[in-house]
Image (cartoon, rainbow, N blue to C red; front, top):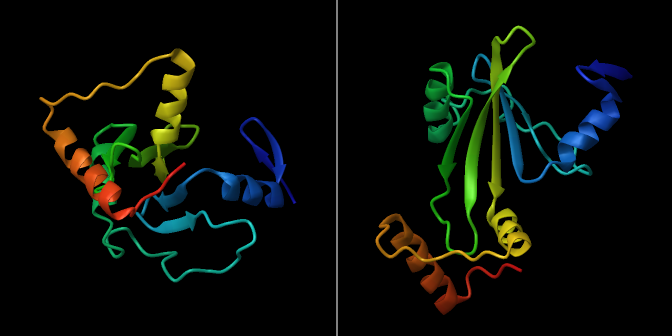
Length: 157
């Protein structure tokens, strides 16, 4: 079945494959705050019991905060994951989803490690990151890196 999109036409199978190929974790909540979609690998096909439940019922605290900010006009709301380090940095990003008339139809949630993108940017521009000892936020990430180095808990390429 072909589905006409705002700029092109795709089959329902192509849309499913496209969504399943997106990087990171992807979720869609409708305007009633109900989970209507989440990305699963292309070869998986099951109907999880979380679908249809609200993010309040699922106890997704960041989604609750993001929804309030989106209703106040923000387009994007970003939260860092708690276990980030100096070598991996996951963000929990929420995007406002609007229809053609700019009415709120839902919220997209993506969870992704942005460190590979930052690393690529630095490599391509010939820049380096510098440690800001005065920034207290960095202390937690340095501690996690030290713990990882001691235990070998996180090994990323």
